[in-house]
Amino acid sequence: MSKQASALRAMNDADLKAELDEAHQALFNLRFQAATRQLANTSQIEKTRRRIARARTLIRERAILAELDTAIAAAAGNGE
Image 1 (cartoon, rainbow, N blue to C red):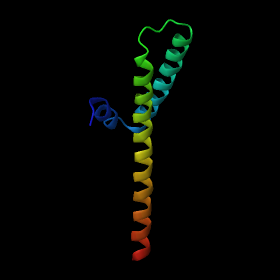
Image 2 (image 1 turned 90 degrees about the vertical axis):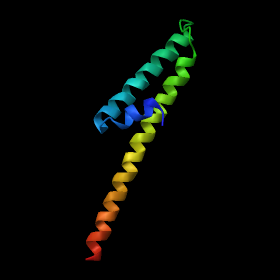
Image 3 (image 1 turned 120 degrees about the vertical axis):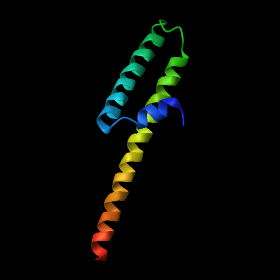
């Protein structure tokens, strides 16, 4: 697991969503700089896209786990 992914995993849901919003804003700014030829290091765009993907993956992973927990709790409740 990368250093960035472990740092994201340590965040709570609200912080993770804030990180995602911040990354989207950063990507917008980088694209704007690239369009106006002010961006010297274009690899920053790809790094930011990966940052967004990591955050989205963790948010989705947590949603799936929450659904699974709900289904397990419901199945346990019906089995009694």
